[in-house]
Image 1 (cartoon, one colour):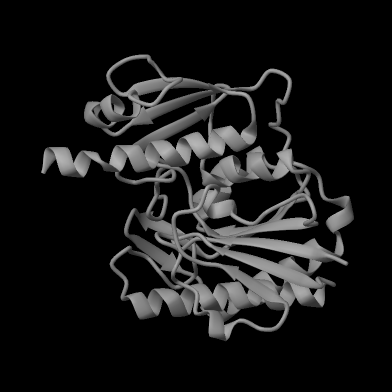
Image 2 (tube, rainbow, N blue to C red):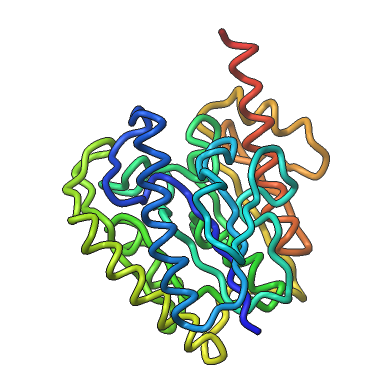
Length: 276
């Protein structure tokens, strides 16, 4: 029995270019890319699929549109947010509609877990985006990433960080943060179906993300958008202030890395109440 976990975001979805897209359009386009991945996964031999709706408050995918043997994680908050529901019983992970980290040139709607709070995340000295952070957690559970889809900036940033067994599908070319040259949606869906099928078929030969460091733990550095967010996050135990906008935290597990980044994004959002 093969189980597939799909974490779906919005920024790297085909046909979209801005957070101000109408909600119904956003939902329709996300469902289109997702269904291509689901169809390909079943064609490749998947028996069950769990989807984590991972954009904003996780209420983008209409559950009534999903086929049999597909479960959906919906709503917010969740302890592991974009990876909620993943465990070691899964055979492969897909990242659908992902994007480059904050500050990356021509990245579509670029950010790292929070466009409002976080500018940059480093793990053991390396800049990580959401794909890398989530892959680190999946690797700790022993589950490889098989497919990543998103904009060209995502592939440019993330492909060197992942093993060669990970398949990438580019959905669009970023022109600026909120404009893109969109690839034909049906062509993108065909590519996603094909790569999803091949990823599931080859799941036993997929390699794990190689940044795992269980013995030494993880030195996490958060660079915030401004000093107020750093002031707020510094309230949480375990943080060390490096300078005005940077904080350090030592995490013993990848799960803790993911939870600390998520919690920091939430804590930083409180700045709206203080500064407005």
